[in-house]
Image (cartoon, rainbow, N blue to C red; front, side, top):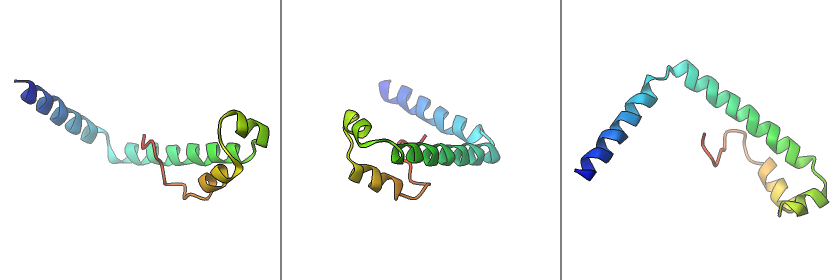
Length: 76
């Protein structure tokens, strides 16, 4: 029974995702890309002291800002 419950909820989630219109999903993706670009820009402008406070180095930031805008590790 437990397996069936998981299957039903999983299949419901897939159908619920498909119910969102394609244009809306595309718009959400573009907005997410813009947000990533904004965040990476803010990271690039942080001072070395601020980066040290959050546990990042200048090399970490350089690696992050060189990534293409469509690379999203959180995949929201």
